[in-house]
Image 1 (cartoon, rainbow, N blue to C red):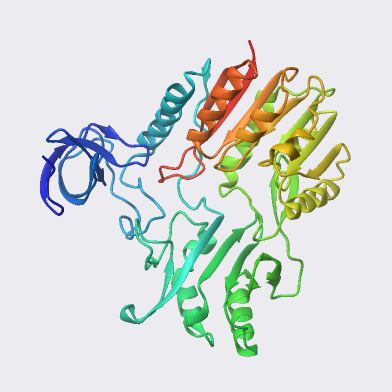
Image 2: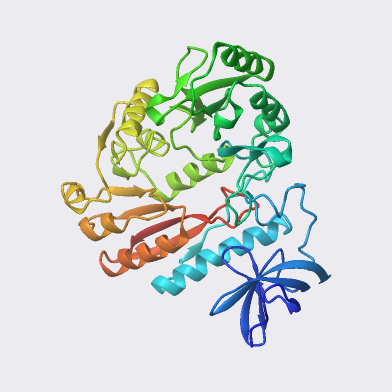
Length: 435
């Protein structure tokens, strides 16, 4: 029989769910326990009852796991930005790898011939892209700034963030003070963080125009803290640099310059991104005569490094603004053997117009929804190698089944990319080759 909501219960934790919660059984019913680790015995409070399972919060750890550590962040448990700071890095990586392998087996009946070692780097100060909520809360004394609270719509009252790039994570109190002093602090809902190798960009989303005094105050803050401010009063097409300079920031990958606007999609973790690209190049086993298609190419993060090793590369992306940026980056690096084109890769008729040259290799880096339309539409019988970079292991597993059943590929290698340490988010890379 299910216990009533808010009941306190003693639980033995068997394993971790895909979302990073402890999994236990109570009176025959599954309970997902936030803040608990495998092998622990905890006292937990039931927070929600559902038909097939209950949800609970750890109240006390009665028998702790050897993999338990003290969370570094004082906001852990309230802020929704991290979910696994209470676990060692070793447990986090092993858990993510097991999630990937379990989903591949469950949804596709596949196990990679080679399990790739996790790609991981620094656990702190890694996050270069983020959206921070801003809210005026009178009961808390003014501006609240941070990520959303865990499982709630409220903005967490964060005074520091150790996963953000250190150039931003330490500035939260100063940002709070800055926004409080602007002319309409209640009309500012968000700050978007975009960090390049040399410069930090902050996009201020404001619902009413900035005053001259606001601009002076923002400029002074930028000079003091080495920040570039961007203004956004509407959609992304309204973003402008307040310093009047170029809209673009830069990072380097494979010794190439990649320019990006602060609202462009870029990988959040620079060190993992570098190693991720290196691994993709290795798995593609490129030769100077190869033709490569890069689908979901974005601003050229993979395309440009591939072009330095192949004869010809074609990049396709649904967002025309990203294609324009990719072309700019090819020109910036004097790379001439790339063609970029805008193509809706979620539209069957559009994808059907895409020709895959004989013996062309493919790289796919789709969004969370995966590449189902692409793989169900293209004829890949002559493709010898396909590398799939995934931000959702569920859709990767689904698409892996299509690659095997429809196209006759074997899963030759797969492993995780720890793009988001201290979260349960699993990014991965898989390589498919002919038997």
